[in-house]
Each structure stands twice: as C-alpha cells, then as structure tokens.
Amino acid sequence: ISVAIIHKEINLRIFANYTQGVYPRMNYGTSHYFKNSKIDFFVNYSYTNQKINRKNLEEVRFSSQDWVTDFNRNTRSETHNVGFNFDYKTSAKSVLSLSGNLQFLPYFDYQTLGESSIVGNSIFDEMQSNNLSKDDKSNIGLDLDYKYHLSDNSSLSINGHYTNYDYSRNQTVFNSYFLNNSFNETTAFKTLADQDTDIFTSKIDFNSALGAHSEFELGAKLSLVNTNSGINHYDIISGLEVLNTQNTNVFDYEEQVYAGYLNYNYSKEKVSLTFGLRAEQTNIEGLSVNEINTQDYLKWFPNASFNYDVSDNFSAYVNYKKSIQRPNYSNLNPFIFYLNDNNIVTGNPDLKPVIIDHYLVGTTLFEKFTIEAYYKTYSDNIFELPIQDNNTNIISYTPLNIK
Image (cartoon, rainbow, N blue to C red):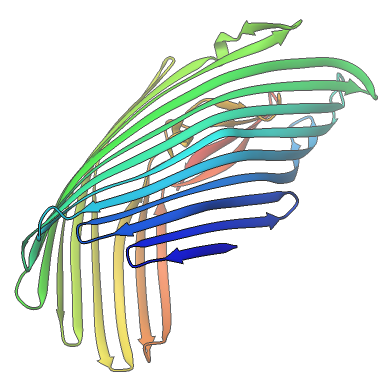
C-alpha cells in the first residue's frame, strides 16, 4: 500500500508492506522531498518487524561416532532506518552535499533449538540444546561531498565518509544429555560480546575533456578502518557464572588502504575505448590474545573495454576488469558463536582478499536484445566450510580462502 502527495516543490509518500510466510513480516514508512532554486532535500524513515524461521538437518560422521542433529532457528528483529540527502548550490559552479544512512536494531534475537541423536557414544545417545542470543546493533554512515565545475569541460569532486558500526551480543546456551531416555547431565554457559567499528574514507576526483572525443579521469582515495572487539565466556556451574579464560578474548583490527586511479575514455562515430588502472596499497594488523596477524600488499587493477557499432542494428563489445573483494570485518573476528556444545561458528583473522578477473564479450541487436558470454576467476575465494575434529567431536563453521 502506498500513498503519494505531489506538489511543485514538495513530495510526500507513505507506504506499508505485509508479507506472510511461515511467520509475518511488516514494513512501513514515509519519505519527503523538498526542492527550490538552491536546496534539494530528501528524507525517509522506515520500520521493519519480522520473524524468520530456518530449519536444517545435519549428519556428521566422526571417526567413531555418528551425530544427526535437527536444528530449528527463529530470528526476530525490529529495525529502524533513516536516510537523508541535502544538496545546497553554493554558486553557479559548485554544490555542497550532506547525506546519511542510520540503522538501529534495538531488538534482534536468535533462538536455536537442537535435537541430536548419537550412535557410538557409551555415555549419552541424545542431546537437546537451547541457544538464545540477543543482539543490539546500530550502523551510521555519513557523507560530505563538494563538486566544483572548473570549466565547461572539467570538474573537481571531494568526498569525506564516516561509518560507525556497533553491536553487542548476549548469548546463553543450555545443553541436556540423555542415555536410554534417562537424563544424564546438563551444561550451560553464556557469552558477552561487543564490537565497535569506525571507518573513515576521503577521496578526490578530477575529470576533464581532452578535445571533442576523449576524456581523462584521475583520483586518489584514503581508507582507515579501526575495529575493537571483546568477548567474555562464563560457564554456569550450580547457578554461578565462572569466567572461562580459555574462551575469553579480545580482537583489535586496523586497516589502511591508499589508492589511486586514472582512466581514459575515447568515443568517435562507431568506436569507443576505455583504458584504466587502479593501484591499492593495503596495510593490515590484527591483534588477539597471543596472536598477531599482519598483511601488507600492493595490488594493481587494470580495466579495458572496446565497443564497435557495426551498423545501426548491431554492435559488439569486449571488456576486461580486475577487482578486489575484501573479507567482511565480522568474518575476520576469531570469536566463537555457539550453536551447542559441539557446533560452533567462528571467524578467521588470516583471511585474504578475493581477487576477481572478469572477461566479457557481447553483442546488442536492434537496440533491444543483448547476448553476452563471460568468464570469471576468483583467487582465494572465501567459503564458509564445516571443519570437523574427530578427537573432540566438534564441528567448526569457518570462513576459509579456497584456491
């Protein structure tokens, strides 16, 4: 459902969405737009309330035991989103812009219920687990942009960006063990984790025409990332919380990226060409208890494209681009998230970035139909894999680089 009110300078919209799956999902909000000779202003707000169900059946064969586990997980969340953009024409040649996106999740929890059947264990043959995790998250991103037209054929753009991501997690896990349908023992523990991430980037771009058919682009960018994380693990023994120092940890991560690029574009009649090169120097340091991870590397990323219009109804083109995909910061965090005593999810601070080579050829027919073929290679691609330990009967879901 959507309702809009439109005026010459003001635009107002109100909307609501409802989806029914296993559980319902609701989303509603409003957006406002205002414009005059000097100011463009846009703001929107939305609220989402949802509950998502996920089930999976897992069978693991250890060296001497077989585990079959049925997981049923419900995720409940409330999300507030605010976005805005403010443009101000400071002169006939320049524009100053401020934009932002704010996301708050005051309510975000998982509850995972698991039932395991075990064959080959003389102490217990069934386990029941109840995992409850409550999160509090916020994500704020702000951009300040300035664009100045030096002439009719050239412009200068400057951008500054800041992101803050903050979350805390309170997790409690209870496990009950049975033998021949008789209660054997129970274990319980809780973890308190938090992560605070600050990202600052600054870039400058210059664009200029070189004659009637070509264009030149030049730019530089600086990116600084700082993440501080901590986790405390408590075993619950006879109702008392006892600190488990072996599973208590801190993780500090710093990343600096210095980048520069240049592009050249040429277009005349039936032919268009693009050549470009970007260089990135990356310095990384990750610190956790008794472990230091450092990475320093320089990467080059060329790109090129060629397009030829054979006729008014037929054109052919070929492209190549090398790019980088860095690991998610949460995947670098080595902390452990427990599904139960024997199933854990953990990060990997040794992850390397993924380098992608993308080759493409294509054609356009009658300005309506496009046919393309492409080939991609991923160096050090990242997958989350289950790693089983036959000595401890633990399954660790861990992101790894795959050749």
